[in-house]
Image (tube, rainbow, N blue to C red; front, side, top):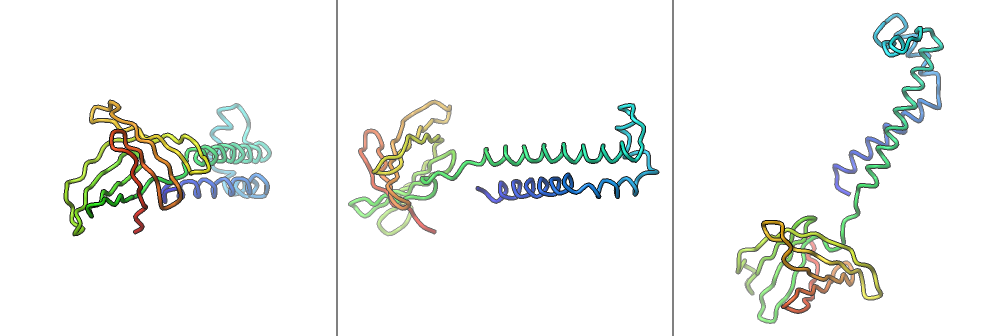
Length: 189
C-alpha cells in the first residue's frame, strides 16, 4: 500500500468513525439546531421538501444526513480497501550474475520492466531498455509462486511472455523464451 493510499484510507476511516459516533450520540444534533435555529440556510433542504423547520424536523434532518454520510463514507472505505492491491513479490530490483563476471539488472515496476547490463567493474556496459509489462499470477505450488509476464512493444502489441517462479523473498527463476531459465536474486537497498 502506497503512502497516498494509506492517507486516503485513513482519512476515510476517520470520517466514518466520526460519523458513526455522531449517529450513536444524538446530543450533537440538538446543539447544532440550537446554534443555527434562527439561520435560514441550514434548513434550506427541509423547506424544499415542504417540511416546516421545527426543532423535531431539524434534529431528524441532521441525524439523517449524518447517517447517510456515514453510510457513504463507509462504502468509500470498503471500495478503497478493495482497490488497494498488495504489492507483487516480484516488483523491485533483481540481479542475474553471468559466468563472464557481468550482471544483468532487472527492475520490475507495476507497468514496466527495465534491463541493464553491468560490466565486471560495476559500470553500466549497455544502456538499459525499458518495456511495458503486465503481470498475471498463475498460482502457488511447493516450489513457489508462479507468474506470467506479458511484454508489449511501443504500439501495445504483445511481444513475448516470460514465466516466473518466485522461490522465496530473495530468489526467483525467470524463464525467458529462447534464452532459457535465469536465476535472479533480489537487490536490497
